[in-house]
Length: 291
Image (cartoon, rainbow, N blue to C red; front, side, top):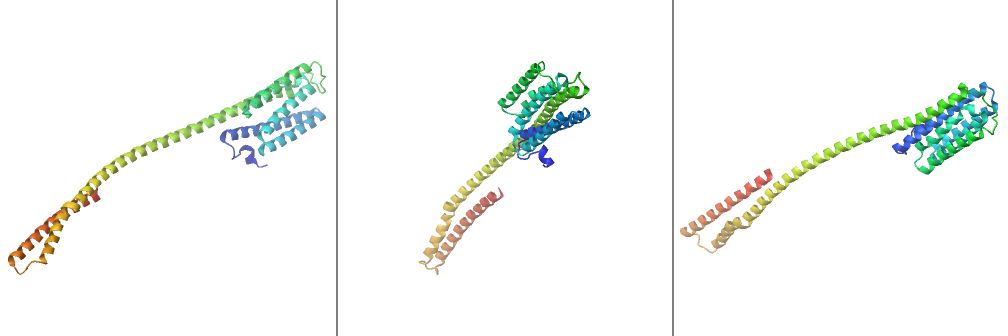
């Protein structure tokens, strides 16, 4: 059995892992308490209760292994049922001065922390309180085998201390883990809010960039439309006239000075018009590229 598996199970959620961890600690504490009781029993030569406590330790250890292997519900339920039955035995074996009555409070209230379904922890509550009442009634009819004439430091006051410490320990652990979980949630919420704010800022920046890009595209579209107009109308007009004059030159007498001068001047003028249009087109394209 690896120690890391005793206090942490990676496959469980934070909430389930918290319950898993605390329950294993509770079983370890129960085993430690039994060891203390065994030492006391040896000091008074109580052999039979000694071997019963040894058996309890073996059962608790087996339940811990079962719990670590993933049988959470059955191991937890058996643990509390067995603890209640052992409290009944201890109460009747040692009598009312044994102090085992107080442990019934532990098995009545602690299961609430380890089970999600009400049927599970409520049934254990009823079982624990019912057996406690039954034990109180049996004190007058059952003669204890190893009675204590008066409350002793061990086990009477020890059982009181154990029951209160176990209840306090369980609820305190759950509260501290709950507060820790709330802190984790708070930090996650802060991180989510920061990410949300970052996304909102990025969204605003993106909208600004898209608006600027849209305006740029509108300007470019206007330039393209103007370019298309210049290309299809104003540029084609002087070019068509030049081509027409060139075609007429095939049929004219170029030795005639007047005709030659006319065609030369006409072609030159149309070529200049074409050049002006091309320069205008070039300026439009340059502006679009710069934008």
